[in-house]
Amino acid sequence: MEIYMNEDEMIVSKTDLKGRITYGNEVFIRMSGYTEGELLNAPHNILRHQDMPKIVFKLLWDRIQSKKSINAYVKNKTKNGDFYWVFANVTASLDTSGKIIGYYSVRRKPSNKGIETMKNLYTKLLESEKNGGVSASGKLLDETLKNAGISYDEFIVNLQK
Image (tube, rainbow, N blue to C red; front, side):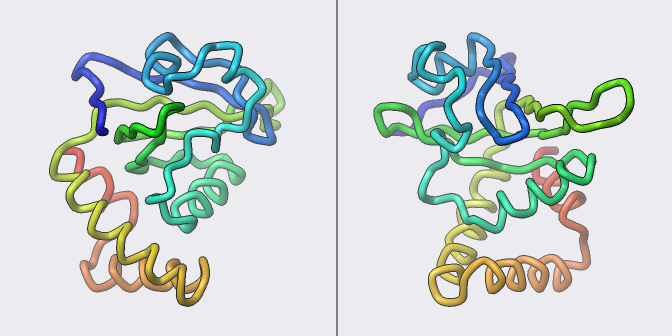
């Protein structure tokens, strides 16, 4: 069953360098269906829904490990198997010398247009991954963006408008 964020809500979480949860706000805890104790030190991918293509997370990790932020539409899975969509911004946390010490994400309610567009694209990317792995879905994503004449960032942000 799909659950929905409220317009005025923000989900906030932080992880360490290995992607283990070190903080989650009340909305994060409530939406996930887990207790705070179950979430702390758990891998953030505990929320990964099987409908999410691996290429999205590869792109995400490539970006944040190079100290660049990224926006993405993400379908998350709750503890009881329900799901919810978010529009996520993920960024590296830096110490005073510029060294990455963790990551944080702020998520808000995604646009309906974004969800519908990404459902279709993610279905195609998953099929491509089944047949040719992450490199095949990466190639398909690149071709899709090139054919649209738009960068990944422009594509994602425009869907949220």
